[in-house]
Every structure is written in structure tokens, then in C-alpha cells.
Length: 376
Image 1 (cartoon, helix red, strand yellow):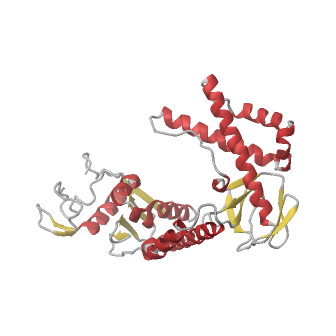
Image 2: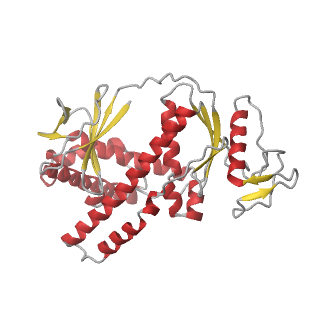
Image 3: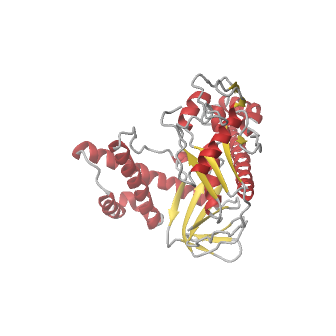
């Protein structure tokens, strides 16, 4: 399966799509309220099939006659989303995780609806028919495979996008091996510290644009709630955040491609993102470690002879001397360099961690156990 995302041209016809998304928000809120009432009375979730049957009955009532104007498959998809949310909630609670029930959503916060086999069609060139209207989109690449599903989505700025799912199966690219491998340590000072002394710094796009974000925030907060000026200020703030997100995403993709082209396999440390955010907050979100790892894994899955390996997050990569293997239990986060008490080697914290990560990743190939039993 392959997914394509295209932006629609901005015109007056997009208002119809905006209204359709708002109408799906009303359907979502109705069934959320229905599930809550049912649970309060019977103490259980009604189930997907019961909700589907109830949807059919509601469409026969004059009160819900306007639902006939909405695509039938997209209404069914709303129930599919609600059922997945409740199923995930019950699974999380069963495993001991804290999970809240599905919530009501304002129209502005409801972002998309999905059309399956009917209600849409890709046309020649860069045109698409959604319902009875024909829209034009920015076609940045050809759509491979047979289109199976189309999701109409609006972002925080108000632009409308189409997300097309096809049955195309990508064949992994047979790239020649380079014979190179490396371990990388994520950090706040340097984005990636390599075991082979190849380092990569992060531009920190949010930090660079923080003054502009603060000005836009102040401008938005000073406007009267419900006014058109406040709405324009909100769109201005949303555009700045979208620009930062696009810059960060572009940096992640280019770096992931560069690493994949250079190395046959890469070793990384499993990170506790939530714990890092509790300590350093905004900076961790600005760096986007998790999003980068997901992109790196995706690119490696498309190419043969490429692999990403992960070591245990409890392995003391920073505290272990890569020369003699001694563990410095007294090392803390403020120590950027330290001297091994056993062999007296002067070590850089991040470089030492990267070398250890590479060594542990290489040991998995020969099935050796090099990780100590005690967490660091």
C-alpha cells in the first residue's frame, strides 16, 4: 500500500468540502453522546454493528434527513473511527495504562472524512471529482497503483488536502553495499554524534523562529474573541507553526536519506521520549527525535542491504568506557567529558556513547551478549 498527499487549489468550491467536514463533526458528536448514554445505562459499549444499525435508523428520521447529503461510506467511517477509539481505550485500560474515553470535538477541531470505493474519482491530469464537484490539486508526482481510498483533510490554516491510498507495493531498491556502519547518539548539544566522528547538528527551527512565534501569539491574544481580526491572527500563527513543521520535516528526510546512502546499517539507542520531555520540554519537541527515527526506518525498509538496529534503553552507553569496559556510576548529566577511573582515558560523553552503541549493534549480528545486566 502506498499513500499520496496533495494540496487542493484554493477556491470557492473548497467551502463545500469545509461544510462537509463540519457536518461529519456533528455525526461524531452525536454518536459519542449516544455511547456515553448507553454506557451510563447498561455499563457496556454498544459495539460497532449496533452503531451501524442505529445509523441506518437515524437516516430515516426527518430530524436527520440532512445526513443523506453526506456520503454514506464516510458516515460509516466515522463509526469505524469511534469503534477504534473505544477498542484502544479498553485495551489500554486492560493493560493498566491510563486512557480517556473519546471526546466531543468542535467543528474547527474535526479535520477530515474518508471516502472508500464510491463518492470520488481521480480524473485526467490534476483533477479529482469529489461528490458532484470537480477540484484541481497540485500534482507533484504520478499516482501509482489502483486508488482505493481518499481522505479529505483540512489543516489548521484552513487549506484542504487529499490523501489517496493505493494498492501499489513498492519493490525494495537493490543498492550496492558500502561496507560502512556506525552508531549514533542523540543529544541536545549535537543532534547526532557518530562513532566514526561524523556529527550532525540540528538547525532547531522553533528556536530560530521563537521571536516571530511570540509576536504572533501576543497579536492573537490581544484580539477580541469571536472577531474576524482574531481569526486572521490565528491563521497567521498557524502558518508560522506549519512553516516550522515543514522545515523540520525536510531536514529529517534529507538527513535520513544521507545516512541510508552512506551506511549499510546504523545503530541507535532506544529513547524514552516522554521522560526527556519532562526534563527538557520544548527543545526535545523541536528536535523531533521520534519523527526522525520513523522516517529513517521507513527509508531503510525501501532499500535492500540497509538496516537500523536499536539497543536497549537501559544500556549505560555514556557511563561505559569503550576502551576497557569499566562503568562510571558517578557520571551525571552535567559531565560532558570524564576520565575513566580504570584506564584513565579522557572521554567525550556523546562520542563514547556512540562508540558503545555501535559496538552493541555490531554484537547483535554475531549474537554476542555485551550489554551489562544492571541498568545505567
